Length: 109
Image 1 (cartoon, rainbow, N blue to C red):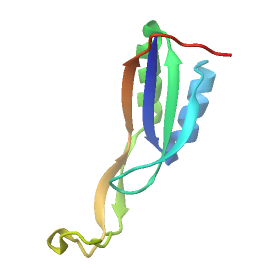
Image 2: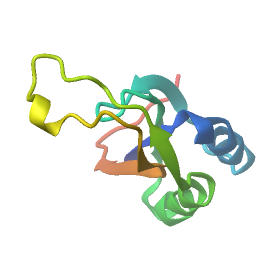
Image 3: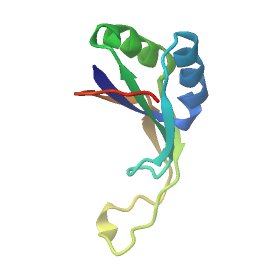
Image 4: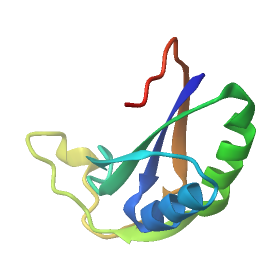
């Protein structure tokens, strides 16, 4: 048994949720915030059998894509002004960060 923790960008959240439901994976969705861009994310908690991990990872990969996005600068708050960029920059966002953890027990009541 494994616990899969998938952190995805909010833009991919509904698409991934629908794909998980269609493939009969049960998931708990949690709202979360990314630290680097302070943007909205969704964290999925998915408990599943070891044998289904490859299928689950394929579903996540197929529904969470990376994209380029222009990001407005954030002024340094008590930080080093030398690293402050006064103009928007393009960064890669999206995709998914996935953790697969071993689980000793899983109960659904």
